[in-house]
Length: 126
Image (spheres, rainbow, N blue to C red):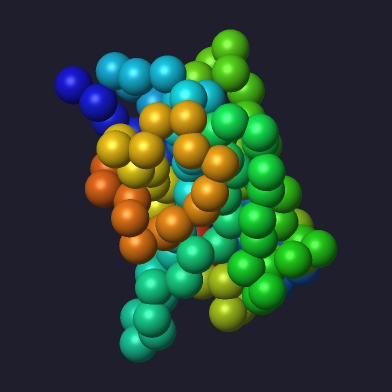
């Protein structure tokens, strides 16, 4: 069974850091574009970052550029999201996702992602 599992959320003070992990099972994650998407109460779903399969291109949403870093560890079949200088507006449930129909893709299409994890909650508050 193909799954994505997110870990690493929690409560952090403004200015702090967290590292989220997305571990894949049932498939090789480096063959797919993996994205991080967040959903906050009262806000639209937001694509945070993604890393493509074929050439490792990386994309960031404007609200997180310069603060968040996405990376892969192929040996662990995982993708990470290092989040620094966190702000209260980063509070959300963070999901990792991929498009299982797009093996080897070199694009990032959050709307096309059809396999999602269950999410991990990040709360940035003092």
